[in-house]
Length: 76
Image (tube, rainbow, N blue to C red; front, top):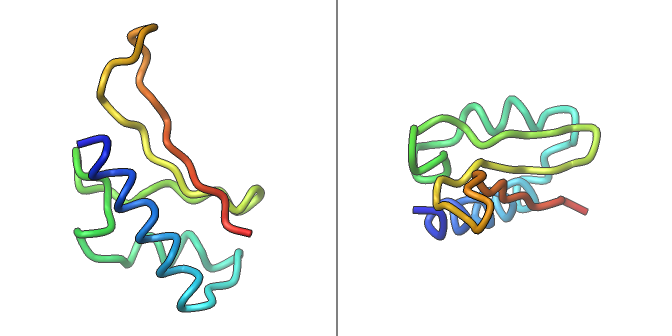
């Protein structure tokens, strides 16, 4: 599921770019996307950080420290 989530994150990044969404409207856009671009674990929208123009979600596959992985992508 972490890979599925990362793929969704990249697809959401592409959608934001394609639709030329201003940074200030990113949170609203992320809230409105369909289930195919949401977190695969809980169906919630991905996290949008307007200050850094970053999309992210918390994965659930364990890593070596047993802490969840946070996957993020920065829009340029």
